[in-house]
Length: 548
Image 1 (cartoon, rainbow, N blue to C red):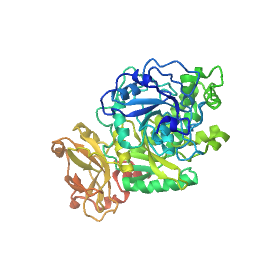
Image 2 (cartoon, helix red, strand yellow):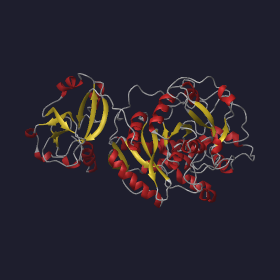
Image 3 (cartoon, one colour):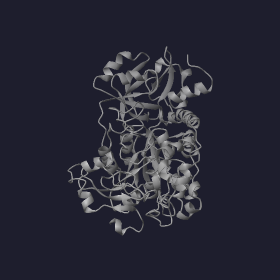
């Protein structure tokens, strides 16, 4: 299919052969010959960057860093895609070039603001398209068109050459039909750009608490605000999730409150600062809804912004502990899939609701990937998103691949060690593992039957006893990957009644871990019912008992 074959305005401009040639000779690289589309708020040298505003006609003097990296990897651009004007919207209808719709239904929105990029991939015009995602603009259209929408960690992919919406939050994203291509594209796009003040280099190793193999996924511990067709699809997605990972319920209220801050609080002022000058004076090419929303930030004061930052910090402190016991958080992408008529009747309200589960991701400095999760009963695509801490992009894509049934390369390991107490992430002895060059390999549980006892000593710690008739669901552990010789260096620090021995995990594998001699424990200190050391400590705090 070509752009001309589409039944909707997915492209603002299709590049001519001369324009493509002007970008330089085709390169040989990992994306050699791959056609791609570019959201029209991202610069392509020699072509205007309209951001869906027709008055912007000056050609870009150079290509955005992201575009240039794709060119250097051998990909070739096809055209610039339609979008919600100035990347302000999640619907795909706020464009003077016309509204896009889902490839599955001419009556339902495509999602925005990366609307044209999603349609171009879903319709088969290109296998890869660049979008942007500040509030969900890459994930919402992915969900509404059955695609993979990768929103990397803020700053991992440079935004130099992107017309800003909210510079501190903007991300360049990819839309693809497979996780494999999203992974390849991210490998090309990621990397520090010293000319971009918002660019951040990825750490040499995964950050503390990020496992190389994600096996535990947090899910909301209560019902969500979902339209009935979405609710049924979400229940089916949860059932599928249980075949991909172990699920743990968490309170997501802090995440959802943080999402409300983006447009319902002072953070809207960043859009006014970024491109408010382009909205004055008014003219027919400006979308009236975009203009009203952004200029509505004028009364916001500096004090309001600082109060908003304080509240966001409080919500971040409440939300992020969800990742202590889980690798990723699973959420639907949107509460529903509105029609174009519903958006026309309430353009602000319907759009605002679409950001319920996406708006907070960049505010909380998370990475995310939207993945297809089947179809609703009415045949419309349904998508979910997996969220993880900053710079967990690689393991998150591996988890997404498992979700989609795509192959995942085995993670090479050195020496594995199962820990259950004071060596867990965030616990007092965890620095011993980090100091030995250890990396968190996976969160897991023991096989059923293990018991956990609180053992005496100056430092509160637990001991595992194997084959003692413990909980069938096992006990929470972390599996750490240590360098050669790491176990030997750790052994002198292991004090009785603990010792190293074989620990069977919930997936049937056996690794060394900390065990306790059954004769060295006090039966009155059996804490197996808590299911893990962290849960035991939390219960003690809740009871008002301080560890001594």
